[in-house]
Image (cartoon, rainbow, N blue to C red; front, side, top):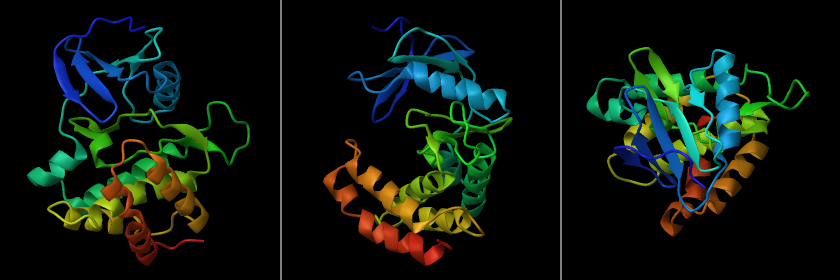
Amino acid sequence: MPTTPPGEPLGSGRRADVYALDEAWVLRRDRDGWGDATAEAAVMAHVHAHGYPAPRVRPTGSRTDLVMERLTGPTMLQACLAGTLDVAEAGAVLARLLRDLHAVPALRATDPAVRVLHLDLHPENVIITPDGPRVIDWSDAEEGDPALDWAATAVVLAQAAVAGGSLSAPADTMLTALLDGPSPLTRTALTEALRRRGANPTMGRAEVELLDTAAELILSKARTG
């Protein structure tokens, strides 16, 4: 059961709603019992303790309520659309955030090749604060091969790039910058990222139908093994 009374609504996503608690903290409440806020908070606290730019968190004792640091600033996507952040630079920032995350040791696994994975690191999950980019929404995080994290980010960008509309060109540029240089991305990881994206219950049928074309775009830009 939720343990924290919500305050002023700040926004809603596909799976959760966010409320203000005060000037320093917000409450994110998952809908329909989705997710595990306790496990998510543990991952966020772990990466934050290693210097990674995730928000600070407070324990709630609830699987649905996550209390975290209130961040000030636009999302990366909003900053790009407003012209305050260059789109190619945004892609490079995403690449750096992935590399920095994969330098953090796993929380549980002892295999040094296993790392913390965000698995949903895209421009709407990065807040551009006065202190730099901060990464939010760790609900999909797990431990594993960094190649899967790169593939997951690439799939989100490629899906937007092939969808048509005003976001297609920026997403294509961002994807190019993300994959400009060596990365651990592999065809095996891409196949798994596509499978997961297609099985995501928040995806509409039209979005799922874009995945094959998105994969072709990624392979045309990436150096994959």
